Image (tube, rainbow, N blue to C red; front, side):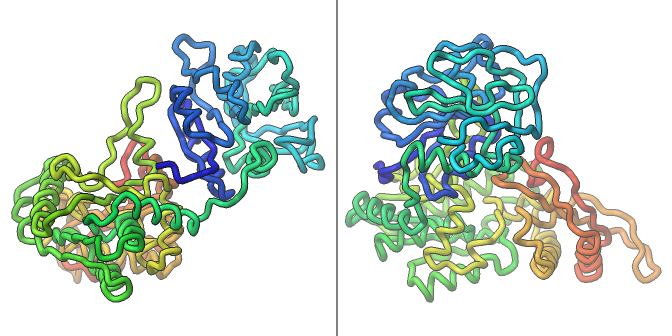
Length: 516
């Protein structure tokens, strides 16, 4: 069901910043969607977009097999903005020429604006001193008929172009990145002056339209939702509960692999504030028995995933006639599940692994159009407590994949104690909300230490803190030495069985955020 009357479509040609374009547009309170570059023209027409953006990409437009969209997009009568590769493709498809540049442009460049209207409306005073971010080895050498230049740079005579009679514009630089200082102004001009959009897409409007859509779809039927304690499932439950009330039942499975007090605040909130029906299943013994002797991380994940399926299915059967399963699928999950240019799918998204296929339930995924930061805003709008909304991402298998080697009650106890200290110090120092994730990992080794003039041979804790926007890439967080030292000192002194703490300085790629 299309519930957005006004939208911008982004055709993705493989740029690493395509999702950033979407974020920048949504920050202007305009809804947008990302679709593969090869999306059928009929589908594009059906979506009735207010405007179209062609993203950048790693290829050259003149390469054999280079990704191309249907050239009919330039004849739809809607505004089109080409960014970098997208601009070059527009030029090539409409009769211009793109060639390998004698001098490539990568990084900061100065833009000289020669046309202070359209994309550059209101930016005339900055002409000749606008910093933009270039990233290209090709450049436009000849414009198609009826196209003229709007801005130049030292090595790009056609750094920005426009059609004289149609709403077709292109830029050789990337307006979506922070290094392009006028990037937000350019995107705003495209949205509001060229596409004539209105800034009406807010979390409040999203709630209204989504609640109505859920009510129409569900009718009088029953819905179940897996409540994990994470922000995605919490917001999903709150949103669906607002739509259908007691027709929703949530199932929380305590697998014994959660942090200390992980979901207590959330469960209390749902029970006391929203009166949401929650079935609390104690399955600690089952999961720990299943994980006994298991070391391989993939086997761990599969055993934990299967356990959730088994228990969830059993509880659903007890409820009787259930027709729908609610999941907290997010927009990056959807995007990553689409292979571009015949390539490999990044990952198949799943929240309650395998449940839809096994249980034969229809899915409700009310968050599948949202990014993580938007889900947090939605949670606040729905009245969820900040400690639940701004909780850092936590893996589905829980602490089971933060314990290297066998999972046992003793090792879980050690990790939980260390993890509490990490979170306490991160929050006390103000760094908890500055990083994407911060957590402790229990390593499968022991090292020699000295405590009270006696030799020790005990466990090692790794401290993992990363900065990221969406977990697709990540860099290790540059925490103050004093903070790292305080965390280390507390863990070694307060957690019995640990005599060493190390700090992980690996980025993703080549490493992953989680250790398993």
